[in-house]
Image (cartoon, rainbow, N blue to C red; front, side, top):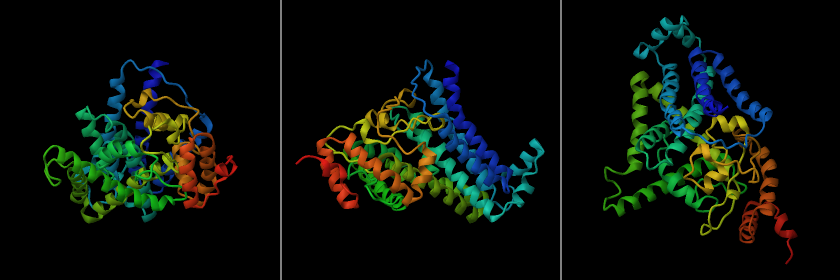
Length: 390
């Protein structure tokens, strides 16, 4: 049973390998693989319920290596996706796989249609978000570990989002659920607007944080040590690598995948703190994040689901996060909630009652005042404060 606790997190890698096989098989199998991935997550969360266990891990180093494995896995997935739109056979990859497996990879690629390429973008971007950003989120919190920071930043480079290692750790965790946090979506906001707004404001915030850090070190904003500039150059290297493999078409294809992966991060930000309010001078509590303990999402996402504890104690490693079953809960598991968020009318229909319930059940007296103001701005009926005695 103790071994199972280590093995369950390898389901993350199994899903990445499934995506890799899906891309390589080509043709309509790519769309079938995409649907299979969505069904595994969404149906799995619906069927297998919650996981509220917090086992003790005697060998946490194994879990760290599992996180590090995400980098070669993501590199293989993205390479396969870029190769799938190249005119020739870069690095002789197709011939090598054909010789190794007997499956004619070049013929499969030739049979891939425009619609299949769209499915490849969706699968690859999904993996950039899941295999890239999720482990990177954990790793870049480990600011004391240079290997984890190196792996985490390269994982983020695939979504043009290395600034996450700055803004998320030093900005978002400080200002979460306040109007000063770019990643916290105010009530009534559309998810598509949030993707753009949070991306722009997040980059500005990261630049300001880094500029202040460099100033304290006696360096200028445009010095060699600027991590914002260095991080974006890492992403440029990846685009250049795609260009070297297949020209501007391959580079453009990679950019589409990366932007979709970055969008997924902002959608997740949207879900995790939508409508929350907090005075930035008060401590962050578990109630300031939407939580979920769905088993499949938890096992395949390194407990990102236990977001309430993560924001209450950001330094706690993923395996030690507690489920907080009494925290405010998301609509369902992560992928299910992502799908709902992408349909704004459905999202607001399901989330407005949850937000009002948060005002009633979780908010302090001060937060109810902030919530009333937020409800007024967004046009949400302030049913909680209306029932409160004068």
